[in-house]
Each structure stands twice: as C-alpha cells, then as structure tokens.
Length: 409
View 1 (cartoon, helix red, strand yellow):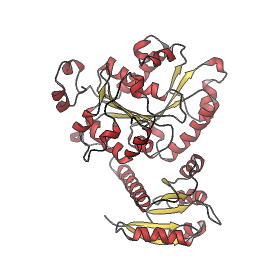
View 2 (tube, one colour; view 1 turned 90 degrees about the horizontal axis):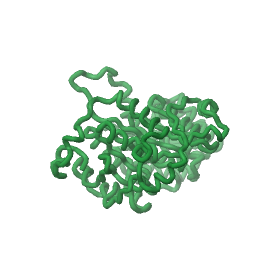
View 3 (tube, helix red, strand yellow; view 1 turned 135 degrees about the horizontal axis):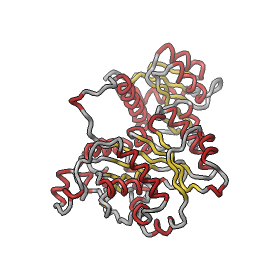
C-alpha cells in the first residue's frame, strides 16, 4: 500500500512538529507539508493533493470549520480530520456539517491519531471503490445476504428501541424471517429488558475473543420466545469501551449472510459505533419525537447524514403522534424538509406493556401501532428474497446442529 499523504494544519509550531514526529515512526504515513493558517492550508492542499488534512479548528485567519467547508468543494478527494480542544457535540456537529470525516479531541495519543487517519483513509477508499464499480451485478454473483436496518434517533425517549424491538419480533413471528437484533447503545442499552431477557453473555464478552467468527457470535446470542435473536449490550457502562467500530463491522459482515434482517439499535449520538452501523446499513430509519427539541435535533442529524451521502437510505418514523399536541405532520415535514414515511400513534397502554417486557405487536396486535408496524414490515418483505429457513425446520433441533446451520437457538 502506498503511504498515506498527510498535510498538518495548526497555528502552533510545536503541535505540528509533535504530530510530524508521531507519523514519522510509521511507514504508512508521509507528511507532505505543514500550514499555520487556513489560507495556507487551502493553497497547499490544492498544490500537494494530500489524502488527509489534519486541521486545527482555531486558527488566526480562516478557522478550521470554514477551511474544511471550502476544501470539500476545492479538493473532494482529500479527507479532513478536525483537531480541537473543544469536545462538546456542537463543535463536532459543525465539523461534520463542514465535511470533516473525523474529530480528534486534544490532547490525543499517537495511537489515536494514527488509527483515526487509517480508519478515515480506508473508509473513503472503500466508498470510492463502490462508486466506481459497475452498477449492474453479474448474474453469477447474486447477493442473497440479509438487509441491515440501522435505527437512530437524536434523543432518548422517542421510541427508538421500541421500534427496533417490535420490527424484529414481527418480522420473525409473522413471516418466519431469520432476524438478529443488535443493541449498539453499548452503555445503557435496554433491548434485553424490553424483551424480558437476562443476558449472561454480551457484545463486550464477545469482542474479547481474538478472532470473531459466526460460531463465536452465536454463543453470545440470546433468543426471544418469538424466535428473534438478540446480541445484548454491555451489562456495565464501563465495559462499552472494549467495543470498537471495527468489531461492529466484523460482526455485521460475519452474520449478514446468515440472517434475512439485522436490526441495529444505536445510541442517540454520532459516536464511532453509531457511525460504523450507519455506514454499513442498507437502510437508516430515524425515529422522530413530537417535541420541538427532538424535531430540531433530527433536522441537524439529517444534515449530517446528507453530508455523508446517506440520503437514499433514510426513512423517517414519527412516533407517539398525538394530534392534540398542536403540531401537524405537514408542519414537521416542512421543518425537516423530508417526508414522514411512517406514523406510530400514541397509545395509553404502551407503558404498562413495556414494563412487562412484552412487545406491543404481541400484547396489542390490533392497535394502530401494530398495524403501522405491519406496513413497515410489508415494505421490507417486498424487497427481500424468500426466507433462508422456515421456523418449522428449526423447531426441536439440538443447539449444536442449529449453530452449524446458522439458525436461532
């Protein structure tokens, strides 16, 4: 692999020298230049055409955000990584909207800067390869692997996990699809509680294995009474640190051929884990609440997703809809600049059902929520080939045989 060409932009000379020194120890990197201000960064990027620009956010003439925005037009093949002492979500959001591909908080370690550069470089290389590859698949290479649905919201309490759980259960129970539900809210995930399951092994236990293969993943999977498989989140918040974006990509790639659907329930922020899930997903389903902060944050999140070229795979679900609140669907669509695809009405009985750990598609099958969920299922099932294995074929088999054949336990 050719060296990754890096331009370092920071108005502090000592910082530039420190980063240059870090990168000089690894033959994967070549520092092609340095700049102390935004205008020099623009000039040198156009001249040197680096693969990566490490960009400080605070500079004397043009700040890093504005420079990144200009570079996204002038040098589309160069990826910008923002560096800043600011670690709040507002600065991160502005950086991503400006076209930055990653955000490093100062002070960072040598390993953090090198791994971030490598991740961004390879991610963008894969994206370019996909774009340049022929759009018509070869008949002999038909892809029968499952569809990954990534569920996301910008605020807790809007029904993201409820949506993920009920989609998974309905897909499995009514259509006998093979379904894996992954809890990627690694610190405070609730999927196991929503399904009244007690995880003995979680995703944090799984990633401690050197080589993550299908049989290892299945050993860490729970199975709900509906037949849907569940990979639970960490039992302790601090254990979440063990899981990396690379682990998530590896698990999804390993299990995709064995399931019709993999549903990922993400955290409510653009962290590395969520971004890995959103990138690899076939579809991104965003759940929107009825309150003004939820709508405002969803609009910001959509802008970020648009900047990442995810527009074609985004669907919107408006949850807990109540016309008595005074905000109409048309008003929400106008504010977001995008059509609402599905509307889940508010149900008085929902809280009591959730507290019992029963999905509403089972407890309230005739409710308006369940009927709308069936519409989502119809959309999904209309675009998926026949199931890999029917549930009748898997009933009563030994767990060892199920592991070998790739069925739920």
